[in-house]
Image (cartoon, rainbow, N blue to C red; front, side, top):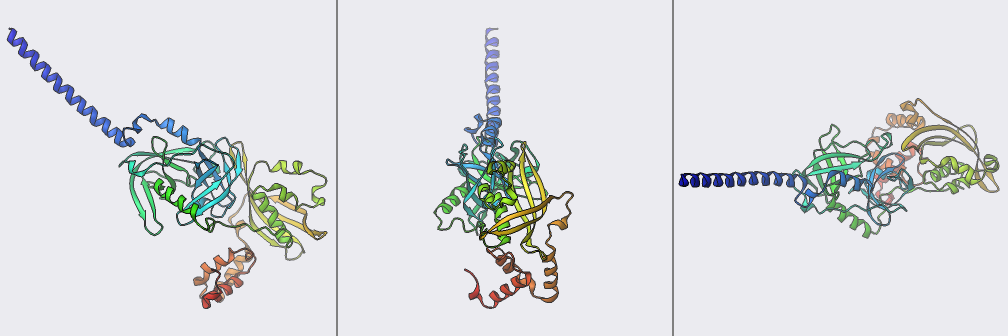
Length: 420
């Protein structure tokens, strides 16, 4: 009996040990899979909630005239990183901070080919840490944080979850991309892609229109491209320049006025207003109504064909009201007069336009000129890229389509005439 009991206990203990070993092995395998999904044992102690809360304090909205996106703090001193395509036509974008206040930013470095830009603001946000990519694991869970659909979707930064898929190398521009199974929408570009620890593995850059593929410039490429931009002789060569010539003529006075509003140099805009318009109001009284103004963009500006020194304009504006960006459109004219040798804005007639049609954005004069060009010059297509480049040079925006064609063709026939 004693031998039987001893044998039973022995078998029981061996079985218990074996079962415990099996369960430990199975639990260890499950933990290993969880660790792999989260990116390793260091990250398993982190939580999604903590990571998102940390990152959101550093993510901003980037608002320009023709585009909107996201950005995030990368260094002390108010340095914000975003995609170049977000600020391509906007040297002074508005940065909407997490507390829903905003500042006018200044682009200090940019690389069009790498699709990166660095903006400086006065407020110092918590800088996010750039992860080392050798620590990222296959199928590791990552999060993209930003402001999808720009100002049309108010509220705090949104979070999209996905998994790391693979790396893709752009050999031409020496940029490494990180692919995920996330779906990106407009507005999230420029925001951070982070791991469960809240460290940046990339910057949201592009995605398939139909979804299922989100691409980010990797943190390693961000680090290297920022180093290259900071040591470049001309780190602003790709950034559009705004030229101010307010005392050149009536047209440039009106253009300067709206461009000063755009970059929130309100005191400079106020200087271009005549006493006839101000009628005794102080700068503080006049500027009060512009407090929520994020952007003013000139859609159309041209001298009136019948009335001297009358400038016809079409404008789009963006205001930040109760955490929501409000879009408005205006059209009308300014009468401008030269007073004591200085061009000043005399009297406006500007009205808000509602129920816009697509044709509102089309310059009918340019449309007609383009139709004439197509009918008279069969070779116009090969000169279109050069025509566009010439039109973007300061002072050339008033050239007719025919003049742009003639210049482009002249450069093609004699390359020495091209501007380096």
